[in-house]
Length: 345
Image (cartoon, rainbow, N blue to C red; front, side, top):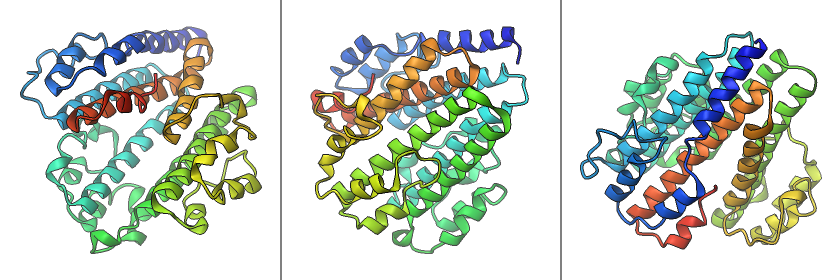
C-alpha cells in the first residue's frame, strides 16, 4: 500500500473515531432511565444520528437497537477495509472471523437458555454476504443440529461437530468457546507471519499477545470467583500459545486462594505499569481499560495502517459494549454508579 493510500485509511479511521461518544456523553447517558430517552439522546449524536433518524423511540425493541448499533460499527469497519488494496488484505478480514465466533456463541447461549424470543436483534442479517455461515438458518436455531446445519459450509462445522449433543444441558460451552478462540488466534498469527515483518510484525504480535493474556486473566478470575472451578478446568480453557507470561506465573494466578488478589498479583507481573491505586470492582474493567488505553494510543499516534485499524476496531467494539451495558442497566433499573463501573471510556 502506498503512502497516499495509507494516509487515506488512517485519516478516515480517525475521522470516524472522532464521532464516537465522549466522556460527557456517557455521563449524560448514565442519568437516562428509559430506552426511549436513550434513543432520543443517541439520535442527536454524530455517530448514530443517521442510522436512528427514522426510528420511533417508543416502538423499537432493545435488541433491534443493539442490532442497529452493531450494524453501524460493522459498516464503518467495512468501509475502511474497502479502502485497502494490498496483499495483506486478509489480515484485516480477521474481523469477519471474530464476528462469526460471536454469532455462534450467541446461538449456543440461546439453545442453552431456550429463550428464543429474546434472540431478537442478536443475529445480524447484514453480515450474511460476508460469511459462509447461513445466517438465515442461524436465526431459526433451536438445537445443536440446527446450528451444525447453519455452519455446514464453513470451517466451524469441523470445530463444532465433536461437541454435538441432543441435550442443551450437556453443551460444553466453555470448551467450544475455547476452540473458537484457538481457531481465531491461529489464523491471526498465521496472517501476521505471512504479511508482516520487522518491528511492525513484532508490534502487531504484541497487541494480540496482550489480548490473549488479558482474556486468560479474566477467565481465571471469573471461573474461580463465580464457579469455583478446579485448577484443571481453568487450565483447559486458557489459550496457551502466543503468551509472554511464564507458565509458572499462570500457575500461581490459578492457585491464588482469593480471586480478588489477581489484580494485586499483576502489580508484580508484566502488567505492573497498568496497576494503580484504583480499586477495580470488575476484573473486566481492569482488562478492558488496558486494551482501551493501548488502542487510544495507537489511534492517535500510530502511522501504520494495521495498528490504526486494530485500534479502531477495538474502540468500536468497546463503544458497543458500553452502550449495551447502559441498555441492560436501564432494562433492569441498575443503579447509576454500578452501570458506570462497567463502562470504559
